[in-house]
Image (cartoon, rainbow, N blue to C red):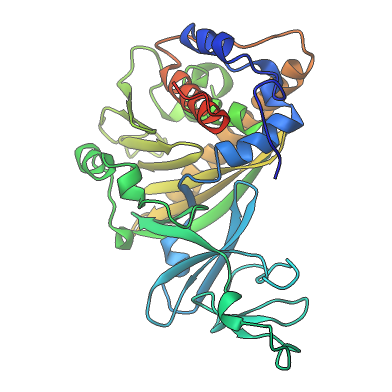
Length: 374
C-alpha cells in the first residue's frame, strides 16, 4: 500500500487552508498529478456512498448488476430471499472478474478457472481444490461492500462496515418530503442509460455539475432554454452535512410543445452522486474517476409511470446535449490547468457556493487521510 504525505502530494496544509478560506480552488496540480489521483481514490472514494444502479435492475431474485465505484469493480446481487448483496467483482482465486455485465441467474462463475459463487457471495465450487487439506471454502467468499437503496436507486459504499445511506445523510428523507422529491420506486420506470466520457479530472466535472453560474453561457440553447437560470430566477441551493440540494420555484407548465420545466429538485451526494427530479422524469447518476485527467459520468434516466415517453425522450436529449457541452468545457479547463501557468482557480462566493462547499469537503477528506484534520 502506498504511503502518501503532504510533501509527496505537493501540498502545504496551512497554505491550502488559507486558499480554501479565500474562495480559491485546490492547487492546479491536484487536477492532473498521478500521485494525487491515486491518493484520492482512497481518501475520497473508498468509504463513501455512491449511486450505483436503478433499483428496477435489481428488482427480481437472481438479478446481477456490475459497475465501477471509484476505481473498484463492483457487483450487486439480489438473492433468492430478496436480499441485496454487494461485492468486489474480483475472484478470490486469481483476481479475475467474477461477472462480465448484467445478468440474471443463480450463480456467479468466474470465466478464468470456473470458481463459482452463490448470490450471497459464498464459494460454491472451486475445481481442483477437493484434495487440498489446507483449502477452506468458507474463507473464500467474495469480498463484501455495503449496499443500500433509496428512492429509485441502489447505492454502494466500498466500506463493508459503513453506516447506512440514511445515517450518512440524516436530513435526506425530510428534505425529499419538503421539496416534493418522490421516493416511491413504483412511480418511475427506468428508461435509458447514457455514459459521458470526459477528458478532465473528476473534480472539474463535479464542480461544473453543482453550479449554474455557467448555464446562460455554455447552455444557451439547451439547459438555459428550458429553465429559468438567471441570477434573479427562482433557483435556490442549500448545503446539508455532506450533501447539497437545489430547486427551482414551481412554475406553471405550458403544454404548447415547448419544453419548459415547471418543477425541479436535485440532491448532490459527496463525492459524486446526483439525483434529479423534474416534471415527469428523473435521473440518477455518478462520477467515475478513470485517471488523473479523465472520468465518466454514468447517468440513468427514468420516466414517470404514464408519462409521454416522446416528451421524456426530448428532455433526455436536452440533458444529454447539456452534458456534452459540459464535457467540452471541462476538457478546455483541463488543458489550461495542465499548462502550469494558472496556480489555482478563484470561485465566486454566492454564485458558486456549492462548488466552494464540495471543494472544502474534498480538502477535509485530504486532511483526514493525511492525519491533518482541522
